[in-house]
Image: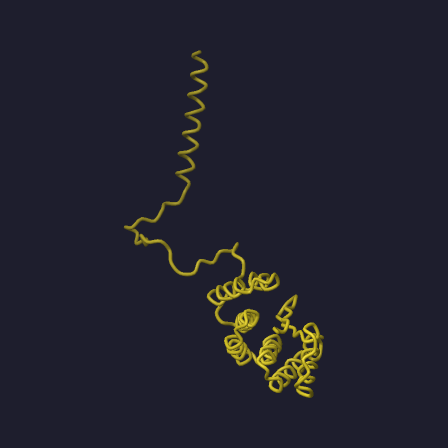
Length: 196
């Protein structure tokens, strides 16, 4: 019985020595006397594990959650500023929500900021087509097509439809034939179907 007691005491003493050794190894914490700030840190906290709002927004757009996508794009604007990518993405989300005026303003800002950004040019053309401004839309699609060097089938098709609408304003076609494609930087595209 005495031996069990001594073994238990040795374990506790060993544990106590280990804990005291570890606390002695830690750096001395800053105190108010050393000029440390007593308040919680402020400002943007860069978390390596946080997901980029632009990526989240693109995924939400692909799943048809346009309002949530717009919120994610607004978060991205807060994190990285109103870059051409963010402006174009917010314009596309507003377009999908039927907010043509807001969409046009954002996309015009995007092409003003970077006149070589193909997705913003194309998506501005889609907005103009939705507003019934086929002549200006065809000029915008031509710009997008030229900047893209004719690589994108979606932009080529959008330009063809805009020119067709100019030649025959009464032509309405069926809903699937009158679809216009939204494009974005990176993988994937967004399809915008004409509203009846």
